[in-house]
Amino acid sequence: MNILFVFFTLPHLSQSAMYSDMVNEFQKNGHNVLPMAPITSDSSKSYISSENDIEVLRVKTLDVFSKNVFEKGFANLLLSYQYKKAYNLFWKKKSVDLVIVATPSVMFADFIVYVKKCNQSKVYLMQKDIFPQNAVDLGFMRKNSLLYNFFRKHELKLLDTCDVIGCTSKGNINYFNEFYPQLDKNKIKLLYNCSKLIPLENNTSSLKNEDIKGKFLVVFGGNMGRPQQLENVLNLAKKTSNFNDVLFLIIGNGTEVEKLREVSNEIGVSNLKFITTLSRKHYFKLISSCSLGLISLHQDFTVPNTPMKLNDYLNAGIPVLASIDRNNDLGELLVQNNMGKYAYADSPDMLFDQFLKFYNDKDLCVEFGKNGYDFCCKNLSVEKAYYDIIHQLDALSKV
Image 1 (tube, rainbow, N blue to C red):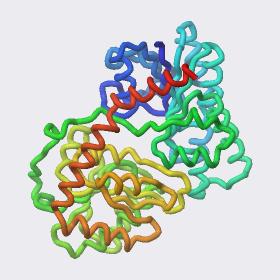
Image 2: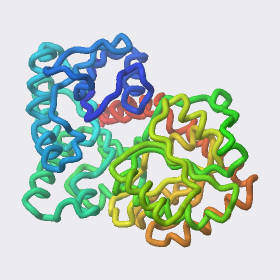
Image 3: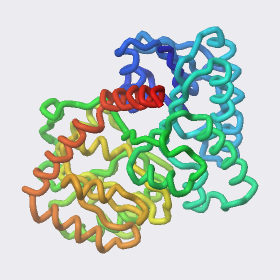
Image 4: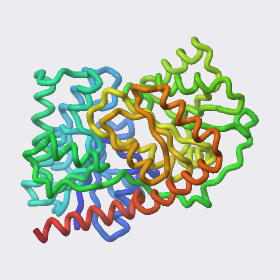
């Protein structure tokens, strides 16, 4: 098959990440892949980039990651126009059997409709977030406002165009069935977040830094913004600050990380160690030596959300402690598979109680870490995601 991948972000295909791993996996299985994503260089125009022996169409866009809300919004508005222009310039004569698109952004809708109409192709949507509802949850926009209705129109257009919608959890599927009754339930399928897994035996590390060696390490890795409700991370660190052997590793960046640093200094929380950037290889080696992986999501979310850091923790063979909203089924997933525990984000004391269960039982950490790794190998590999996508599409053609 000729497969057009449409992404909002895509690292160089030589780098391991969810979308790059997926493109490489489809190529490995004999498909002709055509990935499109925004430019990662300083080029002033769209161009074809050779990455891992694959042609990638890097599209010139405005700054879709701008911290300026208006600039970011305008950049998103232009996405379909810019992708269509680049596609017609470089790839219009190529036939497309399948389009695989990932949210964000719902603003790809017009472009996806155009490609599908031109090629009579199937469309598979990897539904990674539900926008604009998540923006409403966090107070970034008002429900039924002009802005909300504009994005909602494009969201529904994208969903209607897709032949299969791959959701990251059973809770996501239930959400779609309840709040999108106009959609055919048969096209809503389960597709976990995935990555190229690192064998556990190749992912061990002996810590040499004296300030973290021998500590009960709690890692919080990835993006740090308002959706993560970082005050719960800070609150947990403060509650454990009298434990001499507990240290929180805060790895990553985001709009709220500097605020987290400042507040932790103001209130005297000293058991936080900030690490801004690490290569994926060194990140995995570090977290594999941690005792616990921490997930934090905002209490106001109404949509089930499965963060990618879950895959990282499980792949590293460490148990998971999650602070989640009351609409999320992540806690159920952790408990049912004996690979983690959870608390609700509006009950920070409950999070501390769950932390103590791991802190006071190191054997439990080992047991849950092994269970999580086994679950990861069975369900979260890029090979499994490839298999699921192909078989879901095959089932569709037999209906």
